[in-house]
Length: 287
Ligand code: PMP
Image (cartoon, rainbow, N blue to C red; front, side, top):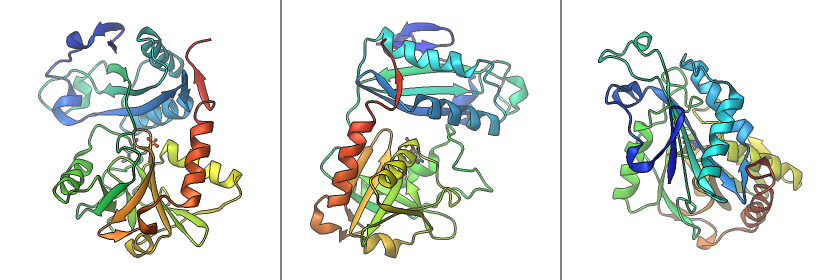
């Protein structure tokens, strides 16, 4: 497996970065998780745009154009001869000194990994708990920035592990439902689909947006509104979306069984349609 690292492709064992890299010392960096399906990179442009927005927000100067970064992703898949894979594209502040001043980091570190990966949480339906860890408020570290700081998601994941669950949901600082540790949440009640608005401490997921568009095209009523745990507990159907998890059905939340533990009809339909569109909506790797 060859990995792109700062201008060259190296073997996995040789893909090493400095212990002075601020991505490591301070979590100072941004990233994207992307998937390629059947040789088509799903919504590559949207991922690259979000990556640049995250970097702009943190004042990280990528020093490389969007076209060149896109080419790095394409080349990483090509060189490894992959058709279906998960891609991790990371840009850190770069190598600096032991202080946290970003001005000491003249050049960002760029790397890209691509390897086959099944849906992260399986395909049989997941059990979820609500974490006592809150999602970061927008005035602390805006979750819209996909940064290398995932500690609050990790703390929530540890709670899910102890509870014997697959995933944890986090509330925002006001107590409304925000998102999972690495995914967005959708609720279905009486045929209406709901998802929290991006203003409530939620990453604007690219899978989320694709599913919103898809649901509209399929004629479903879909709204972005603040949701409470009550809405989740009494849901007819509940599912999550994310690049790594794809579209995963929730069968249980905090001990409440959803739809008798079965995937509901609307979720099934959206899941089926999503599997169709994701093979065509994006950038072809091999011409
Ligand atoms: N929320 C968080 C916190 C995430 O890390 C992710 C994964 N990137 C998502 C939501 C889902 O976003 P996407 O569909 O773009 O992968």
